[in-house]
Structures are given as C-alpha cells and as structure tokens.
Image 1 (spheres, rainbow, N blue to C red):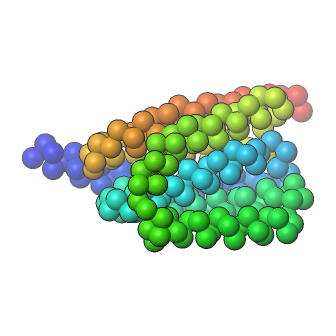
Image 2: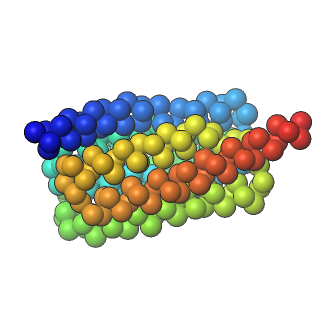
Length: 210
C-alpha cells in the first residue's frame, strides 16, 4: 500500500515535471526576444546543455526506461533548438558553419537514437553528462558574475529547471534508482538554483540603480 502511494506520487510528480518542461525555456526565449540581446547568455553553456540533453534522451530511450521518467528531455530539446537559434541570431553568428554543424548534430543524434552506434557508447557517454551539464551551468553562472548583469537571463527559467530537477530526484529513485541519473539531477538542482539567485540579485540591483 505504501509503495503504491509512493508510486502514485512519483507518477503525479512526473506529470507535473513534464508539464512544467513544456514552458521551461519559454521565459528565456521571450526575454531574449524582448531585449533583443544575448550578451549575458553563454553559447558554450548552451551547446553543453544541448549535448547533455541529447545524450540523456538517447540513454533513457535505448535502455527502455518508462517514458514518463524522461519525456522532459525531448520536450526541452525542442525549446533548446529555438533558444540557440535566437542567441545565434542576436549575436550575428548565423552563417554557413552554423548550418554545417546543425547537419552534423542531427546526423549523430539519429545514429544514437536508432542504435546505429553501439549502446556501449551511450553507456560511456552518459556518466559524462553530469560534468557536462554541471559545466554548462557553471559557465552561465560565471558569465553573469563577470558581466555583473543578467538583463538577458530569465530567472524563471532557472527556477523551473531547479524545481523539475528536484522532482526528478524522487521519480528516478522510484522508477529505476539509477545512481548515475540521481547524481546528475542532484547536482543540477544546486547549480540551477545558483544561476537563478545570481540572476535575481543582479536584475534587482539594476532596478535599484535605475
């Protein structure tokens, strides 16, 4: 009975997480379109995020985990594509090389999902997603701290990120107790929260100066 209740809570949290992930990057996307600047957004951080989301989507899918336990990854990936396009646009970096890298990315991603690449490769890559994901957030945090400005950074996006990662700690524990995934989400909660609080601090300070 107790486990049934916990599983029901886990399923509910999974649905809440997936629902929130439908709008995870939307505040950031809208903020970029409003300020028409991406000066405080780290391109390297975005590409590291993209790598992490892609690998983890492939890892969960090829291992046959419950769809509800990782559906947010493909949802976030679509928003990540839009976000990267906007950042490239406002940084004036949309060129032939961007098109070439896009083709290479989607080719490699398809090979992972369709298992044209041996699954052992994903088993090797998946543990690297924790430091990759952590690095993307650390880099974004450093960009904010160095600029002492967070005008183009949306704190709400990072709040949703921290919250959904926190719920995933519980749902993954209930579904598979995969220590690799649990470690990834715990670290993500801490770093997403750090970026959120830094963005709030510098945005509030900017308002006071005005």
